[in-house]
Image 1 (cartoon, one colour):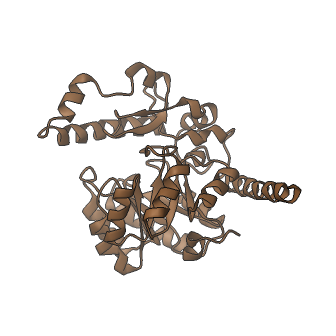
Image 2 (image 1 turned 30 degrees about the horizontal axis):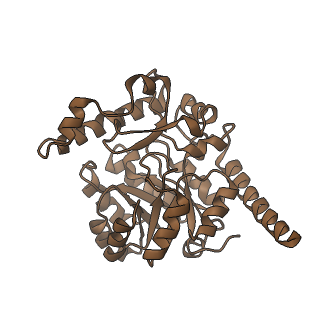
Image 3 (image 1 turned 90 degrees about the vertical axis):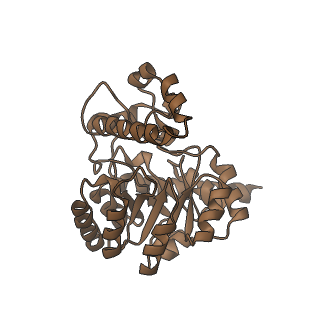
Length: 330
């Protein structure tokens, strides 16, 4: 049992969040997280219709005793945001993680319902903004995150945010071992959001090719690309990625800097990129675009959510024991 703000707030055993992963996260994974002493979060965009989304929320509320979260993309690229908020008002989860935009409307609508609002941040400036708006905690997205990553490593970002913000900090990115978890907690994080190691799980519904890629590739194979959403995103450098490159071409780059055109270019880039990710996630294709972070370095086979969690927590205890032993010896 590890006692932090996150564990005490939600009555969970471990200070872990099963990170929301586009197309990867599903109901079964969140239920398994709950059964194994922590909480999971799922993107609202993983459901094709508001009706499917609402049905999932009702199911998760029953199976997870309400202890789960939903990730909302809160900028204009999410054309379903209003409908998703309506569904969430009727079926409030334990927490929301907002990404890529202002959380103001989400906070106004859902905080009165008792929902804790967490906001993805990558720097101090935005952290202070969401704190003023009423966020309950910040998700410190560091340079080791999968998908949309920050630029600052955990060792700098967490203490920096702790220094300037009064609300709890949860670290996101780069953790795939118990020692990594201990390091984040020691830096001042109230919990850790872990995603990439859980892609290669039995419960995950992505293709076997995607799962096996998480096993076969490592930290050195992760690159950043702006071709998926218009914003830097960490992916596995497959032969296909090497072929098409990771940067926008000259024409796309010029349009992205045009005040009139850039909004539409980003929307088109996002649509095309997400379709490529979706196609690769569920079927074998040479156009492989697999989103992941460098923590796949610690994945050596496809396992269950339970086994991965047990290993991380066992490693956490070993790391603590080693520190205690060194202190005794000194």
